[in-house]
Image (cartoon, rainbow, N blue to C red; front, top):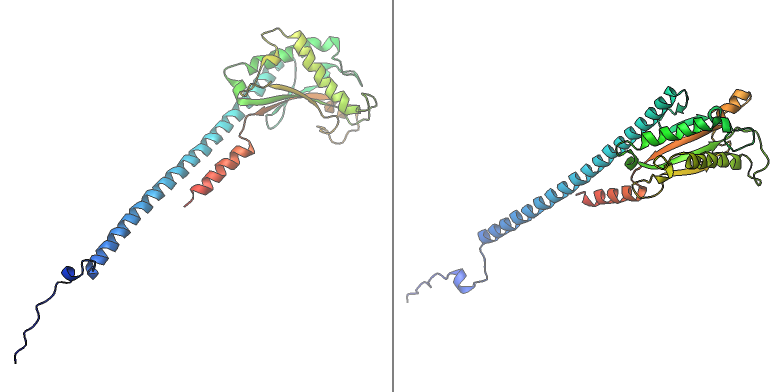
Length: 254
């Protein structure tokens, strides 16, 4: 009895869902390539985002350096212009403060009104400050200019119990009000605003809390601490802006 061999069966014909091993490997390879392409594109996007944030940081640094240079120029030009008029003021080492000694304003002991004989000097100081501020776009780089009053450390009664705090504040206010009254309309400092549209100038008093001479024993020591400081602050990002940029950088990390 002879048996006939059954004809070979085509696997694909019998089971169309069956895939050969080589087909599976080919499919996995395609999936791997597609996943790699997607990953590469995502990494490219992350890299571009990081580069964007780095550029923003660099731009902020450039802006801050520009603002610091503008402030330095303002103080140096003001001091030089006043020296040419015979009015000697001091610029702080970090180029943030223009210091006006009491000798230039003539405040009597315990008094806050500018002595009439010294008013022409006070007027010139205000004129020079206006002149150096209003050149080019310098005001755009500033946030606030503080007129700060300071006293020596000898106790003072009066000023409704505020003592030296009250005296220093009243002296700063007195100088500001004199400028408002004596400067021409086109020189008046109250017309100046920062980039946010807020008044550029502010007034404050510190009493004896910020002396330039710590040990005060002689009359010369006392005199050096009795002064008006003009403090220039520049525009800079606030902590919220820095935190937002930091968060974006962390989120963009791979």
